[in-house]
Length: 239
Image (cartoon, rainbow, N blue to C red; front, side, top):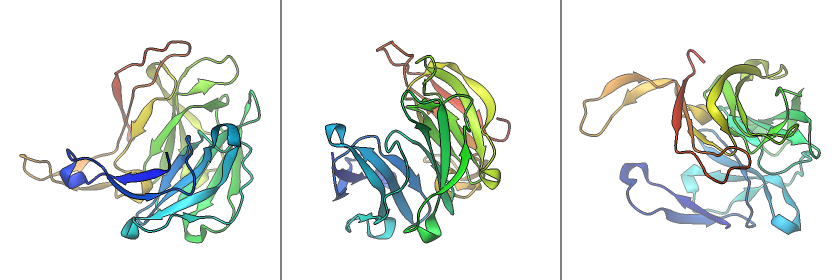
């Protein structure tokens, strides 16, 4: 689908509202964001190739036209990439070639988003992966699970990219309870959001929370059509 829909957090039991459309229908887009904009990296056009640009939505005018970059970026693989961001930059990591034993990471500058992407590291993962989920906070990005390209198995690895030292390899931090392909993940600190804040929970009193957690769940083992319903939490203060 080419539709973009909006969820109202203050009324999240209601249906989503259509706001605008992509320039083309595609799957496997990579999401990046900061406080002002959302970015969509590439996309798979099925039998018609790939989108080789980055599209931007303005949160303050989300019914407006999607802005598509005029630059075609040097990514050999333009879909199902690992994407994570803070308020200043987005990081895009992808496997190189087929079956792919090389992983490259690029950095995208939000303050100059019509420019190209900058190569930061090569082989940042212990082995190349795809169908990986990613999230993080303002300092780190996490690559979670995915499908290995060496033995075509599901991965249970959790690895961390340090934004301030993004030319270095990713560090292994822990493992999932079981290997998973295409898990989902979320963090309330991704995309330049503050590290702590007053969170108002319905029916409870406001309280200061240290919300430095990543949640991930779902996915399936390799070769197994049955998905898991397990949700786990990673404490980024003690990853």
